[in-house]
Each structure stands twice: as C-alpha cells, then as structure tokens.
Image 1 (cartoon, one colour):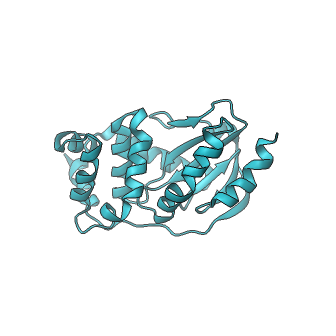
Image 2 (image 1 turned 30 degrees about the horizontal axis):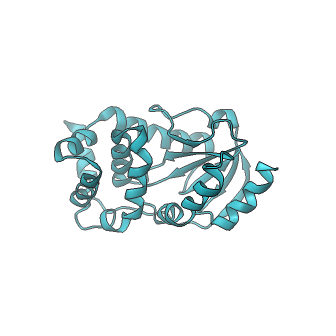
Image 3 (image 1 turned 45 degrees about the vertical axis):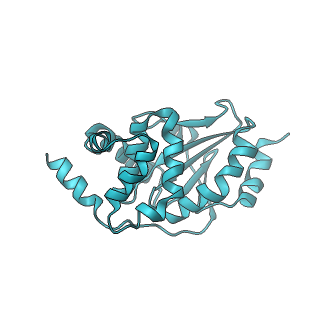
Length: 210
C-alpha cells in the first residue's frame, strides 16, 4: 500500500521541533469557527459551560510543547480546568511524520486514554522523537499503555485517522494562521509560544472574573 510505505518511511526521518517564544498577538479569530471540531471529534477537559475556552495546537515532536505540558499544564489543570473555570482542548498540528504517528496512537487509544498517551509521549519525547530508531522507540513506549506490535502497526496504517489528524492541522493553518507550535486560542485571542503559569494566570484571571 502506497500510504503505508510512504508514511512509515517518513517516520524514519528526524523529528523537527519548532522553537518559539511566548507572545500575545493582536489577532483574534471567530469563536464559532474555532468551535468546529476535528473530524474525529475534540477531546475536551473541564466544564463545557466554562467562561473561558483554551484551544492549543501542538506537535508531539515540538520541544516547547513538551515543556508546556510538563511544567505548565499540570498547574493549569489543577487551578483552572479541574475547578470548572476553563475548558481545554488539545488539537493536532503535527510538524512531521513522527508527530503525526504520536497523535494517531493517542487517537487509536480512545477518548479516555487520549490525554494519558499525549502526556506519556511529551514526558518521554527525548527518548523517542530524537532517537536513532524513533519507530522502535515509539513502539516500546506505547506498549506501556497497552499497545501490541499488531495494534501499533494497525493504527499507523489507518488512513481515516491519518487524514483526520492532518485535516486538523491544515484547517488551523488555513483558517487561523497557525504556523508554529504551541499556538493557543483563549476565547478567540491568539497566543504563540509556550505560556508560563504566570502568563496564564495573568490572562485567565480577568476572563474568569469573580
């Protein structure tokens, strides 16, 4: 199958990690357009009726994305998401075939395992994304989450999931001007780069209000 050969060959290429600095943009986008979900559906965390909606576009091989998810996200979740003040959605913006594979595996794992797989891959990013044998390293890692060799290969051959992951990236680039990761949309306002806990607190406090 051409797709299988092309994609799995591409996985052997070195991962590309976009660098970026935290910065706000004057750009805002339509909240209604942002609300259009992925072809596979969005995997959301938090209160659906929260005043504040954060959408992050990330790549699994982006080192700044990994930094955000390791250092900032736990505090964001504890202080803002778990308390019902913020709804959070991670959307796929793969920068290379390895990142696409990582997101495909998270999708194949199922809704309740999506974020645990994402967290695992970000926390171990250096051990698979920048390995000399990234496919083997990725397989070894996701076996900890219940994948077998067979389910791993079947997932990466799934054309529907492959197309859906890339459709999310393409729509974000075309509709919202996303060109680096991580990029955040907070109630439609664009913020580019790995936001710190302090930066998020400063942004979210006035939006949440009393």
